[in-house]
Length: 150
Image (cartoon, rainbow, N blue to C red; front, side, top):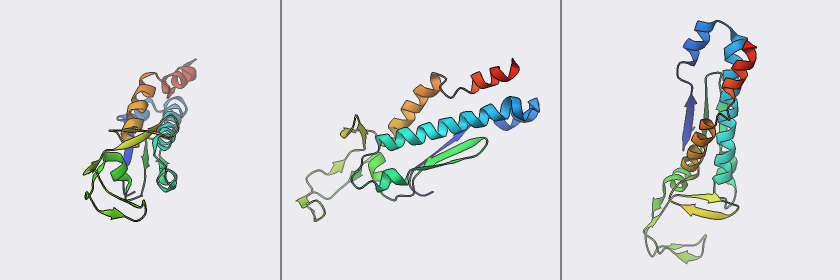
């Protein structure tokens, strides 16, 4: 995928799965936990993406494999939304019917409907929320593994 992407990879997953030799005990919970994590990250990234026409938001997709997942977009202007961009002051932009007045437009994400927060792009802010979600154990990998041993 071109544009911006995040790769989620559980380090040591293959070795752990091979060591325990039980696909039902370890690999199924790990796979479902990775799937939940990737889909959660994709969902919150889409919610945080500013929308003008919806092309960027609808382009955010995920690919999931047994030991990792990728969330990204192939839209070439995604990096401008994520990291901000420079612009030529005074240049007329017909699409908005105005002249540019700022030399730099900071990154931004949406918070609470249409309120835009400047400084962090949607992927960066979503990654922060993902870390909080993972710290709370919302992926439920441990709980699923515990269930298999009972």
